[in-house]
Length: 122
Image 1 (cartoon, rainbow, N blue to C red):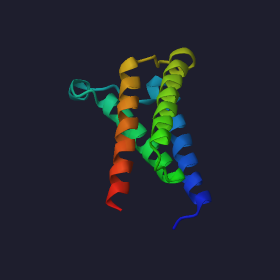
Image 2 (tube, rainbow, N blue to C red):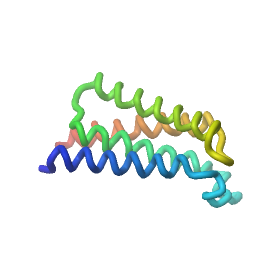
Image 3 (cartoon, rainbow, N blue to C red):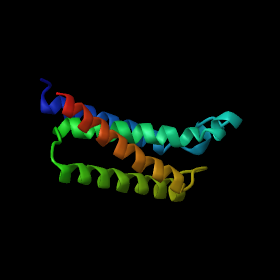
Image 4 (cartoon, rainbow, N blue to C red):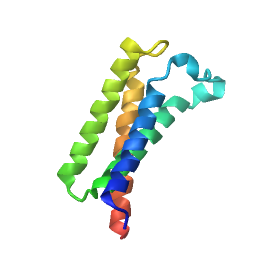
């Protein structure tokens, strides 16, 4: 069993890493090619980032209560919206994209679903 300090350290490191990525200027990322735009690649990235964020959060605190699942999802959704506003107002060449926020919410739900499915198999 991993110690709680280690679990919170992993969560904190992941959170800081995604903050770093979200707050990079737009020019730091390659332009999406035709195929990347066609499959909405950036939305899949947001979905994956938030799925992992909520999964790691649930793992860190060992969530088993439905109310806490809802709380984790709401906090993740709020964080996603805050990121979009910060990008729009303070980060060069980045803008608010409600599609990104929708992908954040979908990813949060996916992460919670994966956690609860994994817990059900234990």
